Length: 148
Image (cartoon, rainbow, N blue to C red):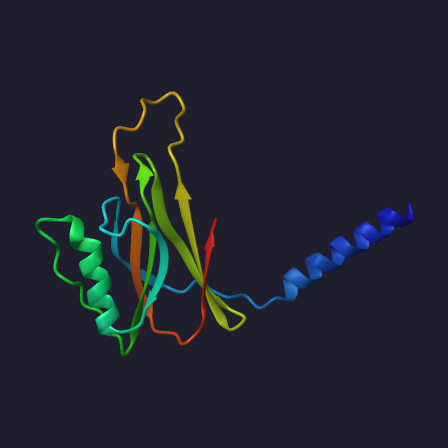
């Protein structure tokens, strides 16, 4: 009985702490590129804060293409780029940045990487490199990536 009272008390305390935490609204972002073909073949999470880094990343990303897309414009005085690359996966995987939150002196980038969900479907026929690249307001905060 004593353990039950302690457990209920701890649960109440946890709920109270959750309720008094300051609400941190999601940070708005704009998708620059989202897809499954990239010249970047490794799993990577990147924060790009200057034009030289951006040009290098875009060149590596577009290296798979015979007709690469032009470099998207980013104003690094006011904006930054967040990129998540899933590495080489079988067809059917999807990667997406789902939300970015600001809180406790840092940015948290939430993303999902999910595989084929249909076990009765035909086997994958090829390999892909899922990715998502976004831009958002430049914030001078450490960035944490969290796969959900």
